[in-house]
Length: 248
Ligand code: MF3
Ligand code: CO
Image (cartoon, rainbow, N blue to C red):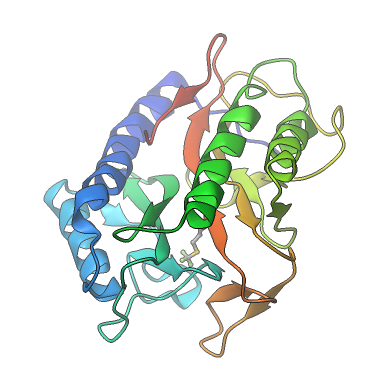
Protein backbone atom coordinates (compact mmCIF):
# COMPACT_ATOMS: atom_id res chain seq x y z
CA UNK A 1 0.00 0.00 0.00
CA UNK A 2 1.28 3.44 -0.92
CA UNK A 3 0.67 5.76 2.03
CA UNK A 4 -0.85 9.14 1.16
CA UNK A 5 0.40 11.95 3.40
CA UNK A 6 -1.84 14.69 4.76
CA UNK A 7 -0.93 18.36 4.41
CA UNK A 8 0.04 18.30 8.10
CA UNK A 9 2.43 15.40 7.56
CA UNK A 10 3.91 17.09 4.50
CA UNK A 11 4.45 20.24 6.57
CA UNK A 12 6.57 18.21 9.02
CA UNK A 13 8.46 16.58 6.16
CA UNK A 14 9.16 20.04 4.73
CA UNK A 15 10.97 20.95 7.97
CA UNK A 16 12.91 17.70 7.89
CA UNK A 17 13.76 18.19 4.23
CA UNK A 18 15.15 21.66 4.82
CA UNK A 19 17.77 20.22 7.14
CA UNK A 20 18.60 17.30 4.84
CA UNK A 21 19.00 19.76 1.96
CA UNK A 22 21.06 22.18 4.05
CA UNK A 23 23.55 19.47 4.96
CA UNK A 24 24.07 18.53 1.32
CA UNK A 25 24.52 22.17 0.34
CA UNK A 26 27.02 22.83 3.13
CA UNK A 27 29.03 19.81 2.04
CA UNK A 28 29.71 21.48 -1.32
CA UNK A 29 32.28 23.69 0.46
CA UNK A 30 33.24 21.23 3.20
CA UNK A 31 34.37 18.43 0.86
CA UNK A 32 38.05 18.93 -0.05
CA UNK A 33 41.09 16.74 -0.67
CA UNK A 34 42.63 15.52 2.59
CA UNK A 35 39.57 15.23 4.82
CA UNK A 36 38.29 11.92 6.20
CA UNK A 37 34.87 10.50 5.48
CA UNK A 38 34.38 10.47 9.26
CA UNK A 39 34.67 14.27 9.32
CA UNK A 40 31.82 14.46 6.78
CA UNK A 41 29.73 12.27 9.08
CA UNK A 42 30.53 14.46 12.09
CA UNK A 43 29.69 17.64 10.20
CA UNK A 44 26.33 16.26 9.10
CA UNK A 45 25.53 14.88 12.57
CA UNK A 46 26.20 18.28 14.10
CA UNK A 47 23.80 20.06 11.73
CA UNK A 48 21.12 17.44 12.42
CA UNK A 49 21.54 17.84 16.19
CA UNK A 50 21.62 21.65 16.09
CA UNK A 51 18.25 21.52 14.36
CA UNK A 52 16.73 19.19 16.94
CA UNK A 53 16.36 16.31 14.51
CA UNK A 54 17.61 12.73 14.38
CA UNK A 55 19.88 11.00 11.90
CA UNK A 56 17.54 8.56 10.15
CA UNK A 57 20.31 6.16 9.13
CA UNK A 58 21.91 5.75 12.55
CA UNK A 59 20.92 2.34 13.87
CA UNK A 60 18.89 1.49 10.75
CA UNK A 61 19.45 -2.27 10.46
CA UNK A 62 22.47 -1.62 12.66
CA UNK A 63 24.02 1.01 10.37
CA UNK A 64 26.69 2.77 12.48
CA UNK A 65 26.77 6.36 11.11
CA UNK A 66 24.62 9.37 10.21
CA UNK A 67 25.54 9.44 6.53
CA UNK A 68 26.79 7.07 3.86
CA UNK A 69 29.98 8.10 2.04
CA UNK A 70 30.71 6.18 -1.14
CA UNK A 71 33.89 6.94 -3.09
CA UNK A 72 34.50 6.35 -6.83
CA UNK A 73 33.45 2.73 -7.62
CA UNK A 74 31.43 2.57 -4.41
CA UNK A 75 27.76 2.97 -5.32
CA UNK A 76 26.08 3.41 -1.92
CA UNK A 77 26.23 2.56 1.79
CA UNK A 78 29.93 3.30 2.35
CA UNK A 79 30.58 3.66 6.10
CA UNK A 80 32.44 6.83 7.15
CA UNK A 81 35.84 6.17 8.68
CA UNK A 82 38.60 8.28 10.23
CA UNK A 83 41.16 6.41 8.16
CA UNK A 84 39.48 6.99 4.82
CA UNK A 85 40.89 10.20 3.34
CA UNK A 86 39.45 11.61 0.13
CA UNK A 87 41.91 12.86 -2.46
CA UNK A 88 42.04 15.16 -5.45
CA UNK A 89 40.26 13.58 -8.41
CA UNK A 90 37.91 11.38 -6.38
CA UNK A 91 34.17 11.61 -6.59
CA UNK A 92 32.20 10.99 -3.41
CA UNK A 93 28.50 10.34 -2.91
CA UNK A 94 27.00 11.41 0.38
CA UNK A 95 23.57 10.11 1.35
CA UNK A 96 21.81 11.51 4.43
CA UNK A 97 18.43 11.28 6.11
CA UNK A 98 16.82 13.41 8.83
CA UNK A 99 13.93 12.39 11.03
CA UNK A 100 11.70 15.11 12.48
CA UNK A 101 8.61 14.34 14.59
CA UNK A 102 8.80 10.79 13.27
CA UNK A 103 9.04 11.68 9.57
CA UNK A 104 12.04 10.93 7.39
CA UNK A 105 13.50 12.76 4.41
CA UNK A 106 16.26 11.16 2.36
CA UNK A 107 18.65 12.69 -0.18
CA UNK A 108 22.07 12.27 -1.78
CA UNK A 109 24.57 14.08 -3.97
CA UNK A 110 27.80 13.12 -5.68
CA UNK A 111 30.61 15.67 -5.21
CA UNK A 112 33.89 16.26 -7.02
CA UNK A 113 36.96 16.28 -4.75
CA UNK A 114 39.16 19.12 -6.02
CA UNK A 115 39.82 18.93 -9.76
CA UNK A 116 38.33 15.85 -11.41
CA UNK A 117 38.58 14.53 -14.95
CA UNK A 118 35.82 15.24 -17.48
CA UNK A 119 34.58 11.64 -17.46
CA UNK A 120 34.03 11.83 -13.71
CA UNK A 121 32.18 15.12 -14.06
CA UNK A 122 30.06 13.59 -16.80
CA UNK A 123 28.74 10.77 -14.58
CA UNK A 124 27.98 13.23 -11.76
CA UNK A 125 25.97 15.37 -14.18
CA UNK A 126 24.20 12.37 -15.71
CA UNK A 127 22.99 11.13 -12.31
CA UNK A 128 21.51 14.56 -11.57
CA UNK A 129 20.07 15.03 -15.04
CA UNK A 130 18.42 11.61 -15.00
CA UNK A 131 16.80 12.49 -11.65
CA UNK A 132 15.30 15.61 -13.24
CA UNK A 133 14.05 13.61 -16.23
CA UNK A 134 12.31 11.26 -13.79
CA UNK A 135 10.92 14.23 -11.88
CA UNK A 136 8.91 15.28 -14.95
CA UNK A 137 6.75 12.20 -14.34
CA UNK A 138 6.26 12.81 -10.62
CA UNK A 139 2.81 14.14 -11.34
CA UNK A 140 -0.75 12.97 -10.84
CA UNK A 141 -1.97 10.58 -13.49
CA UNK A 142 1.32 9.12 -14.68
CA UNK A 143 2.24 5.57 -13.74
CA UNK A 144 5.13 4.68 -11.50
CA UNK A 145 7.27 3.12 -14.22
CA UNK A 146 7.06 6.32 -16.26
CA UNK A 147 9.52 7.74 -13.71
CA UNK A 148 11.74 4.66 -14.00
CA UNK A 149 11.72 4.73 -17.77
CA UNK A 150 12.59 8.43 -17.96
CA UNK A 151 15.58 7.94 -15.64
CA UNK A 152 16.84 4.94 -17.59
CA UNK A 153 16.41 6.63 -20.96
CA UNK A 154 18.45 9.65 -19.86
CA UNK A 155 21.18 7.71 -18.06
CA UNK A 156 21.68 5.23 -20.89
CA UNK A 157 21.42 8.02 -23.44
CA UNK A 158 24.42 9.62 -21.73
CA UNK A 159 26.29 6.32 -22.01
CA UNK A 160 25.88 5.06 -18.46
CA UNK A 161 24.30 1.93 -17.02
CA UNK A 162 21.58 1.87 -14.39
CA UNK A 163 22.13 -0.10 -11.19
CA UNK A 164 19.43 -2.78 -10.93
CA UNK A 165 19.86 -4.03 -7.39
CA UNK A 166 19.03 -0.74 -5.65
CA UNK A 167 15.87 1.30 -6.09
CA UNK A 168 14.08 4.47 -5.04
CA UNK A 169 11.19 4.18 -2.61
CA UNK A 170 8.28 5.74 -0.81
CA UNK A 171 9.32 7.66 2.30
CA UNK A 172 7.48 8.97 5.36
CA UNK A 173 7.17 7.49 8.84
CA UNK A 174 9.57 4.86 7.60
CA UNK A 175 12.62 5.46 5.44
CA UNK A 176 11.59 2.68 3.07
CA UNK A 177 7.89 2.55 2.29
CA UNK A 178 6.08 1.23 -0.73
CA UNK A 179 6.40 1.54 -3.63
CA UNK A 180 9.82 0.46 -4.82
CA UNK A 181 10.90 2.75 -7.65
CA UNK A 182 13.44 1.12 -9.96
CA UNK A 183 15.59 3.41 -12.09
CA UNK A 184 14.87 1.31 -15.17
CA UNK A 185 11.81 -0.22 -16.80
CA UNK A 186 9.10 -0.02 -19.43
CA UNK A 187 6.87 3.06 -19.29
CA UNK A 188 3.15 2.83 -18.47
CA UNK A 189 3.29 0.15 -15.78
CA UNK A 190 2.53 0.08 -12.09
CA UNK A 191 0.26 2.15 -9.87
CA UNK A 192 -0.99 5.56 -10.87
CA UNK A 193 0.80 8.43 -9.20
CA UNK A 194 -1.44 10.46 -6.90
CA UNK A 195 -1.36 13.63 -4.82
CA UNK A 196 0.07 13.15 -1.32
CA UNK A 197 2.49 10.40 -2.28
CA UNK A 198 6.08 11.09 -1.21
CA UNK A 199 8.95 9.44 -3.05
CA UNK A 200 12.70 9.23 -2.68
CA UNK A 201 13.78 9.28 -6.32
CA UNK A 202 17.40 8.20 -6.56
CA UNK A 203 19.18 7.26 -9.75
CA UNK A 204 22.36 5.23 -9.16
CA UNK A 205 24.35 4.87 -12.34
CA UNK A 206 27.68 3.41 -13.44
CA UNK A 207 30.30 3.87 -16.16
CA UNK A 208 30.57 0.15 -16.87
CA UNK A 209 28.52 -2.81 -15.71
CA UNK A 210 25.44 -2.39 -13.55
CA UNK A 211 26.43 -5.47 -11.58
CA UNK A 212 27.39 -4.72 -7.98
CA UNK A 213 29.19 -6.47 -5.12
CA UNK A 214 28.82 -6.08 -1.35
CA UNK A 215 32.04 -5.41 0.57
CA UNK A 216 33.48 -7.25 3.54
CA UNK A 217 31.89 -4.74 5.94
CA UNK A 218 28.53 -6.10 4.67
CA UNK A 219 27.42 -2.56 3.81
CA UNK A 220 29.51 -0.96 1.08
CA UNK A 221 28.12 -1.71 -2.37
CA UNK A 222 30.55 -1.26 -5.29
CA UNK A 223 30.45 -1.75 -9.03
CA UNK A 224 31.61 -5.26 -9.95
CA UNK A 225 34.09 -3.92 -12.52
CA UNK A 226 35.53 -1.16 -10.32
CA UNK A 227 34.39 1.65 -12.62
CA UNK A 228 32.88 4.88 -11.30
CA UNK A 229 29.36 5.22 -9.97
CA UNK A 230 27.25 8.28 -9.07
CA UNK A 231 24.07 8.82 -7.05
CA UNK A 232 21.63 11.73 -6.87
CA UNK A 233 18.51 11.70 -4.70
CA UNK A 234 15.76 13.97 -3.40
CA UNK A 235 12.55 13.47 -1.44
CA UNK A 236 9.68 14.53 -3.71
CA UNK A 237 6.03 15.27 -2.88
CA UNK A 238 3.36 14.63 -5.51
CA UNK A 239 1.02 17.64 -5.54
CA UNK A 240 -1.87 18.69 -7.75
CA UNK A 241 0.62 20.78 -9.71
CA UNK A 242 4.42 20.76 -9.89
CA UNK A 243 6.27 18.12 -7.85
CA UNK A 244 7.71 19.61 -4.65
CA UNK A 245 11.32 18.90 -3.83
CA UNK A 246 11.76 18.81 -0.04
CA UNK A 247 15.53 18.34 0.05
CA UNK A 248 16.85 20.79 -2.51
N1 MF3 B 1 19.42 6.46 1.97
C1 MF3 B 1 19.46 5.07 1.64
C2 MF3 B 1 18.30 4.83 0.73
O1 MF3 B 1 17.97 5.68 0.00
C3 MF3 B 1 19.41 4.22 2.82
C4 MF3 B 1 20.60 4.28 3.64
S1 MF3 B 1 20.77 2.78 4.34
C5 MF3 B 1 21.35 3.04 5.88
O2 MF3 B 1 17.67 3.83 0.70
F1 MF3 B 1 21.39 1.92 6.44
F2 MF3 B 1 22.50 3.62 5.78
F3 MF3 B 1 20.52 3.78 6.53
CO1 CO C 1 16.70 6.56 -0.48
